[in-house]
Image 1: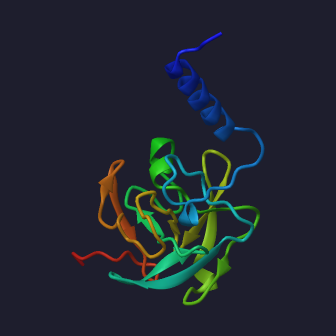
Image 2: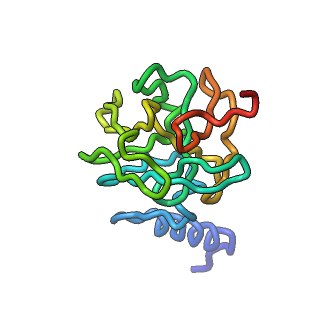
Length: 167
């Protein structure tokens, strides 16, 4: 029986797509977890916070060198970023530990807060910490000063203060 070439090509494309969606565990092959459409919270036991030089000066970063941000809408240690916000600005979460202070970070400034979804988010100097999905590489600061989800986002200095070009 002869099949039209377009049917064979179409069936092959569907089979390839299904094979690419197979079960089992999945780890992202993108650099440091960047580029995912809806990144999951970066959960780790004792997630690390360190510092790194950027074009804005020395800023806080996670254990993979991703820049950490504060959200101007947060009140105290309570996170105001959930749902769609958390898919663009993934919170830095940890499992059962306060966090690990890396180079340039004061351990006394690290803390945690319980999110509405039950996860534990790291804080620094009282600010819940987030990464930004738009940062393609470690050390990027593309989220700096963006006004999204009801307030502005800023990188943090090792002092725990926001770095703001206006201040």
